[in-house]
Image (tube, rainbow, N blue to C red; front, side, top):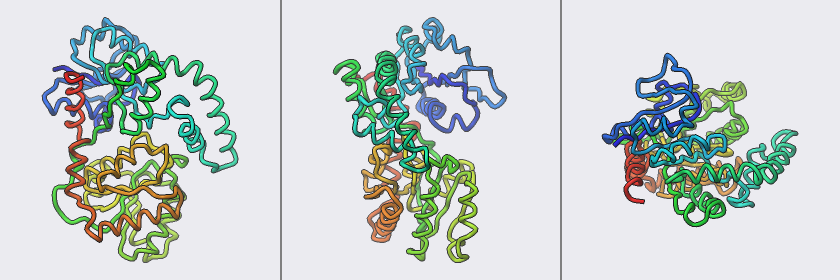
Length: 393
């Protein structure tokens, strides 16, 4: 078999690209004996790996170019966006089995569920944080109900109709997409929706050893609206005061406020918190392998790859319960975590304390958590899922 992945955006094509999303799925295909390369537009970059094909964007919109690749299938990471519909159409017209990856929680239109969509606009606007939040919410809502319904939705429908599979990264996202696709194209289109999660590197696993009473937090903390480092600081500070044995590792480039907060902690508390900054993939795997709990203070996540890596490493997961955290409902479903009853500091703190108690009481099994989620999320498993869909639809 010959199965390519494609991202129609000129990202870098180095090791980081092949550690996640379309690059990692390419590696997953290779690991199960399927010939695979990744495709992106743009000029070749010095860091590009040999498995990456660079080509003119015009070729991505050419059925002849795709036909010449002699492919059995393509996984297109184009988010269902209207501006990439011609890429999807070209692959379809070339007669190639096409899987359309949808890297989101499913609330891409008011038609996917108006109440939840409206709640997500409020979350994306900042949930009242800052003077401009209400204005941002109003703009997002009006845009979605006007241009979104009259322009974006018909063009997104045209994009999705090109796919043999509409691949959603979580069961909740798939639920939203089935509703949307029934409106776009009836039962036939809705029946093409499948759950195909993002892939995780096989280095993230739990094989043996002792888990520490440790909470791991990983994020791009400078994305303040999404990652909510202010909530992280409040929750972790309270957790340290309430639990004399727990330690916390915070990975990812910190904000100035996060570093100042860490320096200001009393010495006994500060010793139990590590602010590591950006870490390499090997170090991240070690952090997750030794931690019991992964904590995400995020306001929204399309999937949550760091949480998925943690599950494969035998961690359980704690996060807020939200329409914009669709993947996390799935992540905690196998005795593998807990969602906070309230999406605020007190709710998150209580969930973390309860989850740590579950570990103390023997209610969490790192071997079982790792086995279940590695079997679903490791790159070779996701690649196998995609290749199976070609023959079993």
